[in-house]
Length: 515
Image 1 (tube, one colour):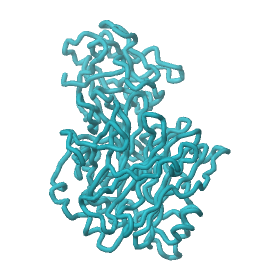
Image 2 (image 1 turned 120 degrees about the vertical axis):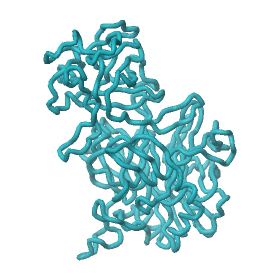
Image 3 (image 1 turned 180 degrees about the vertical axis):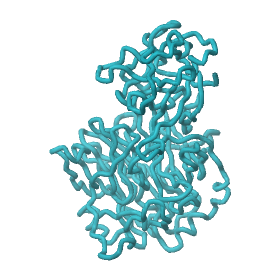
Image 4 (image 1 turned 90 degrees about the vertical axis):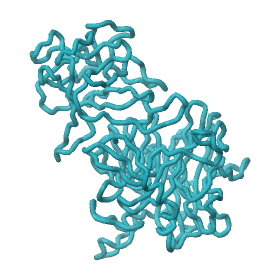
């Protein structure tokens, strides 16, 4: 979240012209429901429900990571001025133009922060992590007019507001900076755990007053494992990235710390020039290098305009990345501006190349495909090429039969818009792939049925880290799999519980190719 100061918008766009010309191809996951957000936190699971926090102090939750609902904020909202529905600090109607930060609700900061900064610009860029048997919610606040900024911490034993144990405790101030003195800003906190299990925080820095374009702006600091506050044993602030950048995020993968951050302007609708960069290091404190090994340099993860599929349109100004690793898949969330309207949450899977570098994955474009098991190299087909209701689906040797070809299309919700899932229909029979025995622990038979639009016929199709696809039943949350390792042609398939390991089983992976 860039500091809101005089001429700040002008500074955002200095030097960003070339970045605005970059195009990053790809497809986006389709998120639905209450997805209006800015500076979203990472998505985090608490007892089977996913939570996400954002600038302004908002909270959203989901049971499937696709459909989101607004929930109560950990930060109380101040009263809105009577008769001022568009007053500063009030949200703009979805789809209407907005400027700067007027579109965000400004939750009130906790008492410890209010004592330090009585007049602030609201809650900025919170992030949450589960550590030491509790949830640590870090947030940042900047004084009006900028200059002083601080990061605070609240904790709760659960994220579920309906749980009797739900209660946020104001733990205190983690760190504070003054632009004119420190030439950095204490904003955009990202807590993370290092390879030894110790707690750290990356943060900074925006466009702090006096910061040079080549000066350090993203810092790492050691936290106390017991309190979550600043470590008294190591009080150093380690500079790790340089220039007019902000919104850092650290992710440990394959022996490297991957540092993501944003450059450009965040809050100008479809003209936003926010760009997500990345670099990596073997050690927490750096040096961080780009793909070519350049020190104090970075590679692009998502450019300022990302071309998406026709169901979503383009994404502009992607920013504030967060990563969820679950079931052998790494997924990143962020905010972006559609071609028109307010910023919303976006979602991508992450694909890792042979050099260990991440790239945003691609959701499967609608079309007709051959669907092949990675484990057996056999293809999904309708048993006996039958058009009968309930005919089992099996693995077969591919013969170019239309009964081995599948039309994949987006399903739609009540508003006839894509709802994040797919239907998979036989090109030979026109009947949809369906899980059987939806009330059973797993489905013994996967069959075909006339499309009726129920959840038994809906499938989530996502890329795994190697670029292959995972097919998950919407009704059961279970994964389509070859029945056994080394399964031969004409063997069965089934739904199994998804992998909890760092790698997805080959039996659960599928390739989609032209028939």
